[in-house]
Figure 1: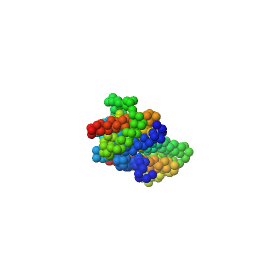
Figure 2: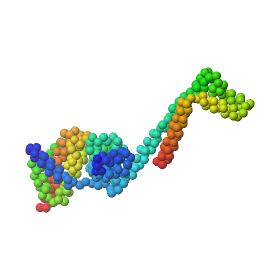
Figure 3: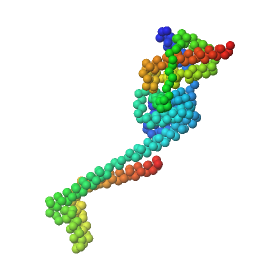
Figure 4: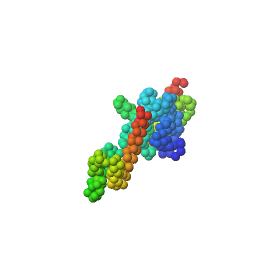
Length: 191
Length: 153
């Protein structure tokens, strides 16, 4: 076990070195905050939730058995805490409608997207992501950005693996659809 | 569309998604979390100290003392029955010593006292010494526990 391993720091914290926990906070704060922000929307609430997540993780550190990655365990705390908070407020996620672009259109859309400027790509990508339902934003971020596996996302979200697969597939198609709409609007505005 | 094309689309999308914005919390986020963690650690330590129990409980002490007293009584009583020597029993020796105090020299009392101690078997002294050692250690650790409790507070 070397100093880049999460387990090294987890063991240090368990042995009483509280300061070692700051390494884990530094390493995961951005993604924990991002996930909370995608679900809760308000930055101040997301920050509060991210802090609470780390405190809960510290309190429950002895129960972390190392069967999954520490990040998976941490994101599941974040996800569940945000979902319970949203349930308290009786907020339900909007669902994706069934109208979706075909796989061929998806490929065309991707090629068209690659031709746009780098800054525009990032802008439209983030806008398209924000248009997805909150829980789908989290799944897509975890899968495509954080490289968490379907099984790990299933552990984090409590959804079945097949459900995760379907949701991610549909979310990807929907994002291409949003991108298509946005880029089409841009072309019209230029004409 | 076949699986190969599906995987290609997935890979393309993954590359594209590397461009999404990852938000950052406030610059003093780590500091805020760590101050809460430190406070939490202090509370956990405090609970641990509160859960501390002496190595030897009060009940055990009572049993130990009672056992020692019973042993002493047994030794002196059995000693009185089996020994013909006038100074062999504990209580008779004490009463006898008190009577003799009035009429005999102090050296005689000393001899009686020594006679009493010599009638107690070595095992009883060992038990007494061990108990005293345990009591001393227990008092020492309890004292340290209270001292650290004050530091935490």
